[in-house]
Image 1: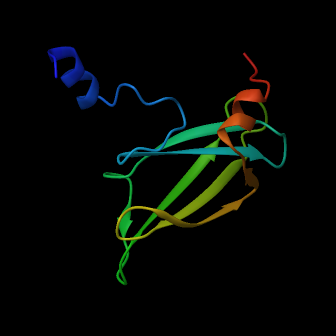
Image 2 (image 1 turned 135 degrees about the vertical axis):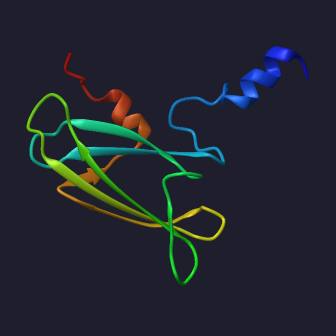
Length: 107
């Protein structure tokens, strides 16, 4: 492996937006109030809280930047291997990366 390949792997190069690797989980949502689409990055090594009974939980509050500023609450639950096992959302809906990319993005 060359020097630049080492740097690329160190900084996560080569992963396309929205792909899950062992370190990152991307979240895509749509606000129920105004329809704005939002994406956020969850660092699986640093943004999870360990549960007493095993596994992990992440709480995220997402706020859009262009329309209504509604607070969208997301709760994700992961197993011991940091694989998603459940998700819950209030004031928004989960969408796919493809839906996010196809949606209009205000400037």
